[in-house]
Each structure stands twice: as structure tokens, then as C-alpha cells.
Image 1 (cartoon, chains in turn blue, red):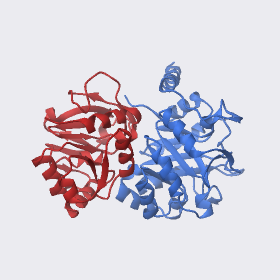
Image 2 (image 1 turned 180 degrees about the vertical axis):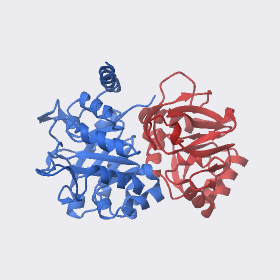
Image 3 (image 1 turned 135 degrees about the vertical axis):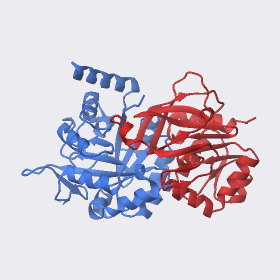
Image 4 (image 1 turned 90 degrees about the vertical axis):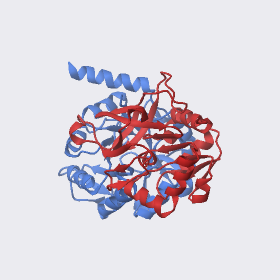
Length: 261
Length: 206
């Protein structure tokens, strides 16, 4: 039986574990090494570490921190943030991280994804699509932590990413980030239907029902950040948490049961 | 001492972390001499099949591996691409492999996927087909992390150690004599992978 991946996303900024709301000012959450140990004990399916301002600040990956984080856990880890070249990615892979995500660099130079896929296989390359919702007009893909517009919609960018060789697409609705309003299911459905590669939904998850809903909409896996660092979604109370496999299975079963009615 | 074979591809640091955590002694090496004289080997790998074989040959590692594994019967564990390289050939780059198994590596067949996406990425339970010291048929849950777009097809049913399903059933572990190959990543599979690694480092093939 195949299990659905539930992926906590850990934002890091200059060695600290942080959390943002709609890409706003980062809030300090704690020590990333402590967090990763807790997630390891909870046997999470996979982790995604994102250096939230690396690209915008023109910084590369924080190798020492990543090496220590990777050394703490025996689960799949992806990393995104500031990867601009195959060499940048190689150094990250050498630390014990098996997947890299590119966002801004893909928008600037799609061939980077093709080069990474040729060297490391498409399964090692994820394209992160940050989607913004401007006041006027449709959804737009943005880069550099939201500061630059790609002037294209998410479906088109997802197709370009898959064509370039991405093995997976992280679909991040930044207008939902940290809001606990649930995923943008319409967006998930639209993008998942447009590409053959797995789509991972991110942005807005509040509880297991939201995770199940995203899978129902066509996502292959679900990612969330706030849900796994705050106690019962109360932003005043930090608590690293992760559902048990049994609870996840039940939520998915209930959801599909209802859908069948 | 377990040698983790370094041929320029693959996630060596995480394999090393896991072997140490499982209580084993290991070194990463790309030296044909060290590989040929290792008491135990791990052939890891993430990446492109043809590129992997090219790297093994260029570094003189194919001969060293043949010597240690085929001639001297040293236990070896192939992981992911490392397992696939043990086959005769692969569609990925249309290259010939080490040829230790009468098997070939093919891409997941799109028409048979029944909605499942390629690459196969995530946790899956595996069904053990024959009892083996490294992967015993004890009825316990065996859940592992997979990331791959290609899988092995065996000509000899007796080589099949375990099956997994993604779109359709495929071979996810093979074993013959002193050789074991797994398509999944034990080094990324929490306690399930740890237990497998512990069994491998203690395994003394007959």
C-alpha cells in the first residue's frame, strides 16, 4: 500500500528556525536542530528545509547547518534556497540531502533544472512554484521570496517545470501561508491535472481534513509549516507536532468515504 | 569494515550516518584496491544509470567489485541505483550494467500506472517473497522510502526478494548468494531502514 506523504516545511533564516505569514517578517520559532530531532523521533515521512531569504539576499545554502541537520535524521530531506548552479546542488547532495528545490533560479534559467535532472535524476529536483494573488488579475508566479513576478500563471510554469525535467512540483500558495484557511484546492486541482509529475500542496493547512482535501483535489503529497510548529494552530504557543500514521490514514479514509456518498 | 563505494553519484553521507547509527564501522572509498579487499560493501547511488556505469568503469571500480563480490563472495548491499546497476542493462541511457542478476531495468510503464505518477516517490509497504537474513519473512510491517522512475525486471523468479506496488507490482528487492539489492532507501527509512541495515552488517552469507 502506498502512503500519502505528509511533509513538514522548516523555514530557516541565518541559523534560526522561523515562520512567516504570507512571506512577511519571519518570526523566531526555535533551534532547527532541536526541531529536526523531534521530527525524527516522530518518524515523519519527509522534511523540507527552506532558507526563506537566501535567494532574495543573494546567499547560498548554509552548508554547516544543513550538514548538522542531515546528520540528525534518517528520513528523506529536501532543501530549497539559494541554489543557482549544479555545483551549488552538488554540495547540498554531498551533505546527505537527496532533493533540492529551485524557485527563483528556475524562473531565471529553466535549463538549470534540465542540467540537475541529467546529473542527479529528475527525482532529485523539485521546482517550487510560489503563487501570489494580486488584488487585480489572476494568480501569478513570483520569485525571490515573492519580490519578483514571473508574469505567468501557475499552470504554465508547472508545465514548463515538468518539461524541463522537474521530478516534483511544490505548489506554494503564498496568499494562504500561515493563515490556516486551508489549501487553495482549485489551484491544486488545476495544476495537478496539468502535469504528470507529483504535485505537493503547500500553504494554508489547518488540520488533517485539509491535508485529505488536498489529496482529494489531486495533490500527490501534502506539505505544511504552521500546522506542525504551533500547538493546535495557536500562534502564541509553539509545539513541534506531527500526526501519527494511524490518524492520517483515518482522516484520508473518512474523506474518501464521504466523497463516495 | 564496510566500504561504501564512492563513484561520484549518490547520497553517501546519509548511508554513512545510517551504518554508524546501526552500529557498523564504515568508510567511504573510491579506491579500487580498498573495494577489492573490503570485507563488506555498500553500493549506494542516486542518479542516472548510464552515468553510474561510466563512473564505475572510469574509476576501475567495476573490476574491483566483480572481484570482491563474484570471486571472493563478500556481502554487498545495493541501494536504489546501486541495486539497478547489478542488472544486465537499463533503459536509462541504454547502457549495460554489472550483470550480476539476470534482470533488466525499465522505466515505469505509463500505460499501466493506473493514475499513479512517475517518479514513484514516497513511503510504501513491501511484500517479502522469500525469507532472507537481511529481509526476513516475519510478517512485520516493512515500510520504506522510495524515489525512482525505473525498476528492475527479473528473469529468475528465485532472485526476487520483495515486491512493492506502484501502478502495478514491481520488484523492489533482489537477493542471490552474497548479493542483496534494494530499490528503496534504508538510510532514509527510520527504524525500518535501521533494522535492515543492522541485519545487513551482521549478515554472514553461507
